[in-house]
Amino acid sequence: MHHITLDGETDFDGWRKAARALALSGVKPPDVIWNVAGNAPELFAPRTPPLEPPDGTFNVSSRFVGLAQIAILHRSPERFALLYRLLWRLRSNHDLLDIATDPDVAELAAMAKAVRRDEHKMHAFVRFREIGREQKSNYVAWFEPEHHIVELAAPFFARRFADMPWSILTPDLCAHWDGHAVSITPGVAKSEAPTQDRLEETWRSYYASIFNPARLKVAAMPRARASGSSGSGGKSMIRSTLPLGGGSTPFTRSSESGPSTGTGMASVAHRLVIR
Image 1 (cartoon, helix red, strand yellow):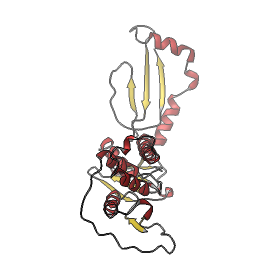
Image 2 (tube, rainbow, N blue to C red; image 1 turned 180 degrees about the vertical axis):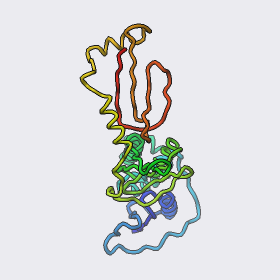
Image 3 (spheres, helix red, strand yellow; image 1 turned 90 degrees about the vertical axis):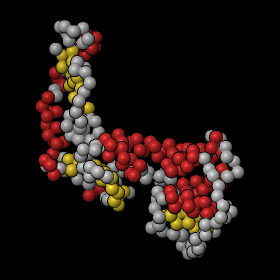
Image 4 (tube, rainbow, N blue to C red; image 1 turned 90 degrees about the horizontal axis):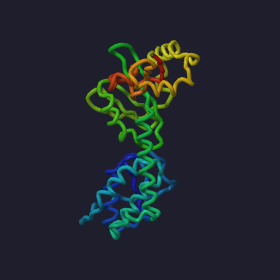
């Protein structure tokens, strides 16, 4: 039995190097146990010397490599064994990934889909809180991902919020942006995430002062929408303050004024004004 220990939960390069050596040495998938450094090894597990890189090489499709790079981010402890099992089988069946009903192929696809779904969820639901004041302010968010996606998702936030320093804290890893590069640090407990947000409180007070449900004429809304494009009396305008993803400055859109401008994130609010 071969015991392979990877450097981390997302150590794809380490898995690829070990899988290549195992496959070229003819080690079958049931004869390999995969572990991650820091995790408790099996009690009295025998120590096996590392495999020497054998001579030779083999190729697999770029499709498998792409799927493996995403699936290895899944939180299932069986992902390393699944990937090696597929690699072993692909050497003799190059069209294996085209068999959607194959159990291993279906499981790989499901893992990759779950990771991508979690990545999109992080893009959509991370909400930054402003910490500090004026030019010393920083933006911090707390998120609990289902899978190991922090490093995968961080470049999106670096592009989206390139002009503000931010940190995304999670139990696994933390991502930080200083305006130049993304850095990754160990995860933290939720108790370490800041909870005060002065702009959030300001926005809540503003929203409460302008929004009066009694002033909304629900029955008039369909007529207002129907007549809003006529150009004269009965003209309507809809203003929406929508979250854009990261700051605390309202993003305003008017149906009359054309494309919107501005950046920022805030709680969602809608205000209907009938003229």
